[in-house]
Image 1 (tube, rainbow, N blue to C red):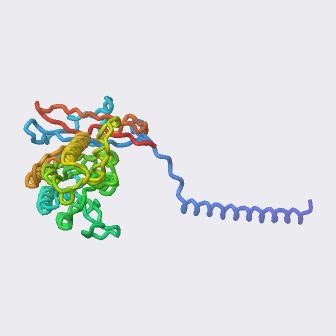
Image 2 (image 1 turned 180 degrees about the horizontal axis):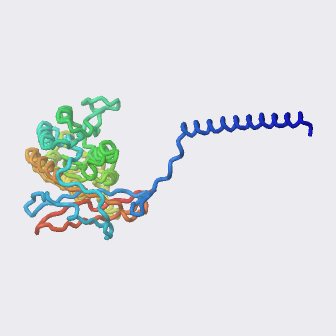
Image 3 (image 1 turned 180 degrees about the vertical axis):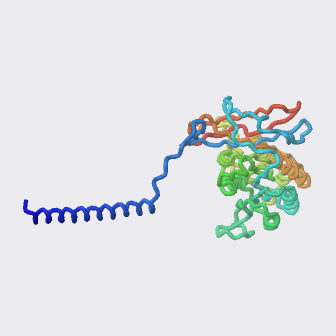
Length: 395
């Protein structure tokens, strides 16, 4: 082969190799830069064999009150003392809060016509409850008021009663005292509507970890509703969904109310149409009775009968809610007794326990599940009150 051709080919191949090496060097540099700027994708989480994975399950909170035979709280119980069963099946306790933990409470004050003349005593009793709180306890205040369609507070005949949250949950005592000063009165009793306010406004959001199972409703009321849009079934169902314990300072206003029923129609205490409808609904369907919704067409005997039934209904409703939730009813004859009852309620809530468990029944079927709590090591005569059950959610 010609010597000049060999030299040319060697020179050409050398240039080709140089270009290829330059291209490879640039590519290698680019890959390194890209790798430094963009981190590698994260590895999937490693789940240990003994780690419990819960999917679509609900933590069930159970408030518990334990007292000895003299009514004094038992304060030295531990997690191992408790056992909880749902529909007869033992559940694993995953949360436990001792008796000295902080709590949240909705303080509901019935300031309707039946208690209007004693508003000052109501505020004093409520202030005692606030003064009995410990550091870290949080309270909201709900009361009744009178408003027009525009929402301003007035005293005209066009006004109507409303339930309002005077202040949300707070631990600031000065804020609570100032809120009490703002509490007014109403020309009716929207009691059931106020329960919806507690469930839908005060306890709308799930409790933080600190207050799980340590939420309560504390209501000063005679329990007789007169003007609510909601019914008891709806209101009690919403309260039950929150899992809170319900405590009632049950104020006896029946005698004074019935004394005002008698005599001249227009100068006496009157039933609302809502109350009259509730009264007639107490009768069995097969029992035929003329439904008179005009108070002035009722005789004295009928008025007293309606009152006794409505007050009896209210007492049964409060007792049922308290028992099902693990709370309690404190009957009082007047507002002076209510002051001591409030102090006792604060003590009881502040010395309650709470446990939590994930139900082994993971069905979202809307069924009612019964809860039973057992405690080992209790002295004879001790009294245990706990949440009795809950309704499973529906998908």
